Amino acid sequence: MNAIELGPIVLSGERFSILLGMLVFMLASGWLAVRISPRFNPWSTTVALGGLVIARLAHVIDHWDYFHADPLRAFAVWQGGFDWPWVLLVVIVASMVFLRDRRLMAWAVAPTAAAALVWNVAYQLASATEALPPPPLTLAALSGPLVDLAAPVDQPTVINLWATWCPPCRREMPALAQAEARHRDVRFLFVNQGEGAENASRFLATEGLRLKHVLFDDTMAVPRHYGTAGIPVTLFLHADGRLAKAHMGEIAPEQIDAEIRRLER
Image (tube, rainbow, N blue to C red; front, side, top):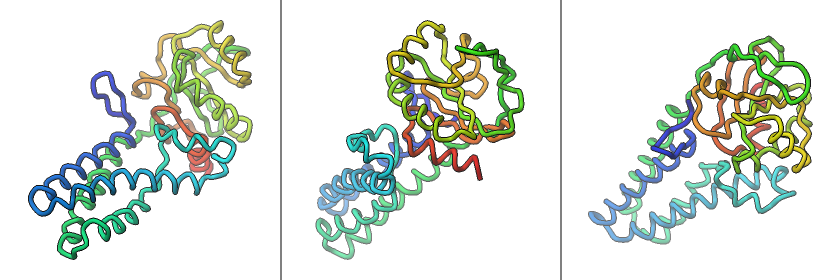
């Protein structure tokens, strides 16, 4: 669900669609460079690299409240976060600089449109989310009573699947802890995968993290129920328990808040 497995590599639907769109763009541009004009070589390189840069920069500027305390996070492109419409500006400028001919500019529409179409279709297919109910599981907690995941709580829930040995899990945990403190009307469940209370307690104490609900999924039953691959995974559930979104990989603070706003609508 929401992920593509390529051997040992697991890609989220978003990352897979970006890579597929880029591949189509470069192949189509390479064909134009051979068949139509070599000018398409510098044009395609500029559009590919410049498009990624400006799409990321636009996202950072639009969400500056989440970046001003840690500007270097702008380089954490693996978290996702791109404003793709701004790529059209790069396409136009690169066409004026490198192609300089109306006929060539008309040809440039083909790889651009093909890449956009493939990206959109791949994203829609790979990111489709089945509205699964919560699993009928009761998990032990780091502190407090057992937690029945299927018990109704009548509030949106965020479930984070993590482990102390997972670097992306460790990097995203402070953002999730801050989100838990901000969104008091949302229940956060931090479900550790296959580790014991001692490891989890040591990690939380070392990082200075205080989380309300740390649970232990020794048999990794939660990812099996939702059909997810790898960790970290962050699941966003409606108030009635139905799955709204499964985010594969490290999640950014602005993405957490955006998904919670969708749950609260």
